[in-house]
Image (tube, rainbow, N blue to C red; front, top):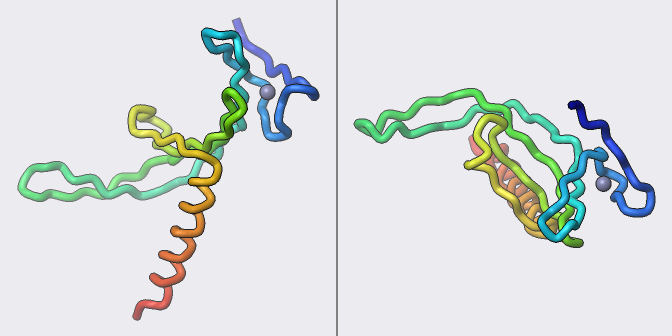
Length: 108
Ligand SMILES: [Zn+2]
C-alpha cells in the first residue's frame, strides 16, 4: 500500500510534505521534505589513531510535533546518529557555523 500526502490547510505548516504520523495520543506530526547535503565526514577507526574520510549524505528537515518545531540533521543511512534540535537552537548553530566558516576563510 502506498501512502499519498494529505496536507490540511488548517492544520499543516506551509512546509509540511503531507505525510503524517499519529502519535500514541493521536497528535499529528508534520514533516518537511528532507534536503540532502553531500558531505565528507571524518571517522576515527579507534585502531592506531587511524582516521578515514567517507562521503555521506546529510539530511536536514523540519518536524512539528505537539506544537514545537524541531530541526533534524543526520546521515541518511544512520538515523541513530541523527540530531533533533529546537528551531531556535538551529538558528544559533547556523550563526556559529557561519562565524566559524568566515573565520576559516580569513586564515592563510
Ligand atoms: Zn502536515
